[in-house]
Amino acid sequence: MAKRRHRKRYTGPDLTAHVDLGPGDHFEITLGEINDAGDTTAVTEGAPVVIAGGLPGEVVIAEVLKRFPERIAAKVVQVLQSAPERVEPECQYFLTCSGCQWQHVSYGHQLELKRNRVQREIDRYECLSHLEVDRTVESVKQLGYRNHGRFTIGKRDDAGQVGYVNAVTRQFLRIEECLLMDQPINDTLKLVQDRMDGQTQMSVRVGANTGSILVQPRMNISGLGVVTGEQHYDEKVRGARFRVAASSFFQVNTAQLSRAVDEVRELLDFDGSEVLIDAYCGVGVFSVLLAPYVRRVIGIEESASAIEDAELNSSGVENVEFIEGKTEVVLGTWPESWPGAAPGADIENGGMDALLLDPPRVGCHPDVLKSVKKLRPKKVLMVSCEPAAMARDLDLLCRDGVYRLEIVRPVDMFPQTRHVEVISLLTLQDSGDQDFGDNR
Ligand SMILES: C[S@@+](CC[C@H](N)C(=O)[O-])C[C@H]1O[C@@H](n2cnc3c(N)ncnc32)[C@H](O)[C@@H]1O
Image (cartoon, rainbow, N blue to C red; front, top):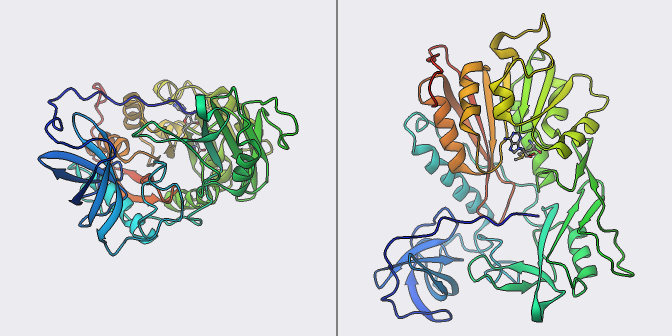
């Protein structure tokens, strides 16, 4: 289950105390730019306002959701002057639920907003700002694409009901279906709705290409019609089968994951002779699918369950092996940590030609980047789901000229939301400074 992230508490002056607006109040406002959370920003009576469901330049009636010392949070309830990119949201829960930020935005414009967000992050750094970010690769499906649903179970009057919690108001919202979910997830939701007494959360994962399903936790409900509490499910990507443990990561948009693998393969442009390191490899999707194009793949992953899956998923693939451990530790002790570094092993460039980094949202540990600059693989490809962390890490690799940023390509894994996956390619520069004594 997802851990709730705790944001840093605001400790500045109270900027909203003087405004006579409270939850439920309506006010007219002209909307400004979209912020990193996907909402529009504006000012009313000198106080900052963040408004969900709007577009820049629109004039709307907004309803106050909550007053914070640093901002008033509101949502659009009526559009008086509409932006050309506005479309009718398809979901009955849009803006009551906070999961989708952009159902009211045309899909083409969502792709543009994602590209612009990535460009803003890149432009913060001098050594990256030469680069024009590519157009966002559109998602095969714009609804029904999620293979993983995480739901909250209501308490007290809502006990036993399945739904979501609004991120601003913290109010529980019962839902009958979520339009982002693949159909088997919504079918499961119907089976368990109102029957979840005693539980706090529920996760449903499906194999979009296999029909396999994993419902957690185990439920003792008679006649439920679905098996719960299993330990694994299976998915197929580009014809290869992957077992995924309940605790292992898997991308939520299977069709788009196939596209991302194709993009990575195209950008790394293998000639078949390479040793590829797949760091943060999860259950081995990139390792297995890229193995036919290189000489050897070595995956690195800290999760024991994911490594177990990866070993199974690569059985029969001769040129793939995995190391269980933290990337920062494994690369920090490379090549000794590499089982292939036996006498006679090719350890030029640390024995690696290409390095794929696919870290979690926080990005790479600084020691990983330090090791990369020491080991100097010719190509580094970063897959990232948090543009700010990505740009910070790219800057650390490029700022002293060891690497040059060549391509940044957003891939839309998460239509209707502000979230974006980004693939970035860096190449090793001959002029790189080889002093690795500091912590840059
Ligand atoms: C974004 S997922 C990518 C997984 C895989 N590349 C894929 O596409 O399916 C990040 C993975 O990194 C793993 N991880 C997190 N921190 C790590 C670390 N310090 N060292 C190695 N693996 C780590 C997580 O368990 C997770 O499997």
